[in-house]
Amino acid sequence: MRNLCFCSGPCAKRPGWKAPETKLLGRSHRSTDGLNLIKETVKLQREILQIPDDYLIAITPASSTGAMEMLLWNFIRDNGTDILNCCVFSNHWARDIIHEIKAKNVNLVSAEFPYQSDTKSINHSHDVVFCISSTTSGTAYYDLNWISDNRQGITICDASSGAFVMTMNWSKLDATAFSWQKGLGGEAGFGVIVLSPRAVNRLLTYQPQRGIPRVFRMLNDDKLNQAFFEGSTINTPSMLCIQECYDNLKWAKNGGGLTYLIRRVEENYQAVYRWISQQDMFRFLVPDEFRAHHIACLDLTDDGYQALSSPQKREFLRKILEKSEQKQYGYDFLGHALEKPHIRIWCGPTIELSDLNFFLSKLPELYAEVRAEYDFC
Image (cartoon, rainbow, N blue to C red; front, side, top):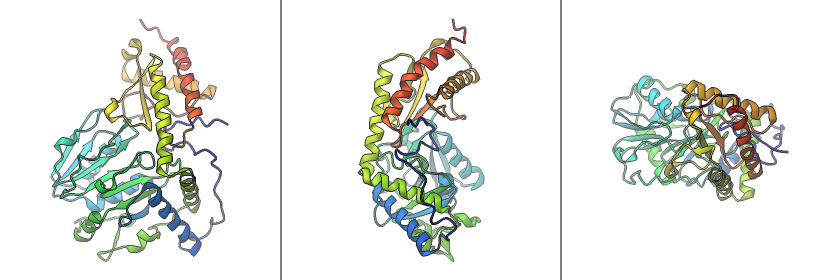
């Protein structure tokens, strides 16, 4: 049976997915069985993502958004923050840092969709906040060598669209946030933070002069909440979601770990790349040098379509989506509502190559049907 869900979050369920075991439903997450499952889930994440042994890992509330907010509220200082602001979510973090946390000495390094911020202007005495990949713009920082090994600040990275789909250079990452709903196709609602020794030192030596909500606190009486990084979540998690994540991680491990996940991504990307080269109706929006391979953001080449206003383009693409869903060709593949109108196809490791090829083969038909409804000159 085909799985034709191409949404970029939540993402398609992995091949062979089935409902997780329910024996821990109604059990405490602090019970021996509950805590052991959480610990095993964290352990598998470390193994598959190749996170160094001296980095701390914890599960947070509120998906990657909650994880990033936890990092921002605990780590942002007034000593200088550079923000690579080039997508919807980096813009969210910029707003929170400037208007909610009210940090001083903030430098926005901005770029318009679908381009990346220029990393050459980064001040390495400052902290740096960035998205390693963006599902809203289809970009990725595959090379992190622009981050100095001798940096005085720390890096705060939103890796929600990067975890489990690309190699993570952990030596360049100090405070990292992600969730399970993208690369693993997991259920949403829970995030993960990963802290380097450099970040832990900051946590223990810097006391923000602001209130920290309980669900964001990583310290107890100015000391590291060690239990939090040993599986004791701050609030009550869904053991059903934890079990599902554990099952997804076992699938990834059994396939070959991160190498297996990335290979599946690359096979999907190459399928889109070949298809783009074999037709002239669609094109990539993002230049090759920083194009994410797990997200295909596409534009139409038609001059008539290009002459439409932004609302008209969005309506045109919405009609393509409606026809696709009616014919069961593919679902949820429109670009983010806060970006310029485009088609966005998730190509992560839970997407089957045969399903992707089927959908791509139907896109020209869908486009032609909608175009026939318009009187393009």
